[in-house]
Image 1 (cartoon, rainbow, N blue to C red):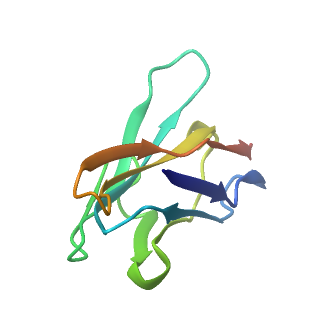
Image 2 (tube, rainbow, N blue to C red; image 1 turned 60 degrees about the vertical axis):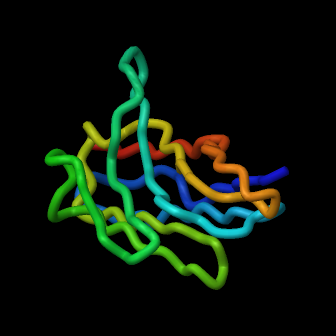
Length: 120
């Protein structure tokens, strides 16, 4: 079994910054891609950013240049540094992890979500 624990959400003024964290623990042999998605009220969940095991990153156009994804492989943790936040960034943010368990089975896990609210 694997657990993902997210932290770092909150309320911030437009133009401010927040840093999200997502730590994975449990039956983990290796972690492949780690990423972030978000879901605003009344909207579908959308892709935000992802980072591969080699550190290659990819961003949605809406956050490119403002958000930075990174990971600490020793801690099985992925981060999302969010700068120049806008009210339209308000959403519940979910981490997404693709990993290989000790039983050599591939799984995809989602975090519980953390609320980010950007006030105008």
